[in-house]
Length: 307
Image (cartoon, rainbow, N blue to C red; front, side, top):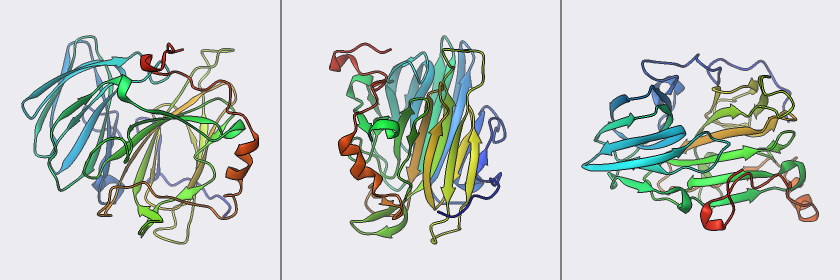
């Protein structure tokens, strides 16, 4: 892989550096310099209300901490939410393009708005937490948990793809490095991607600030994106192209990231190519056990309480 260079401020966005208006993070196609993907993080004080127009994009309102009510397109959805991203799965609301949306929260909280420019106007919907598939990927030190709430083969949208990933402390995820920056029918999708991070407190020292690392290396296609970033809670990394991975969780600090993807391909699909130097690692997983710390939590439908 290509040796790293200093992270570009346009690709690594430390917490607060991309704040705008009511949002602590506001990534738009214009600010990212691409065509489709958006992500906003909206904090609401107790009793707070926020209104926005969806414009030419479809959006998902995803509670990061707390619950809310979402009103859009003549529908009203009560989202139970969760106490935090490490505590359990959450329900969410999909709202269509060309709509006015109101998000309100009696107790307050933080809410991710994941968006993608789109053509079709689909119905507004509410999906409960027990309908979110939980997948365990990798094995050994590459074990991670994926909450496929808006994966391409799970939830209907026009362009938007979004998932959550939880990586136990000391593990590598988004590995082997992979890319999706070319349209190769049946082999690879062209998808822009945003990573939004939160880092869990360590049991040994809950007051210590956790950290992780994110790598993106040039693939020879696109803009030559080259990033090696130390990431903390509230940071984001914008990935227009390139081999991305690993995402590394420091020992003692579990890592959460929210992936938001969209692109120009007519078929909404997540098709990736592994880095040829590192693809062999997948074969080694057949001889390893999944990290026993996973799943971190499951739905009640699976008969296990969150932990």
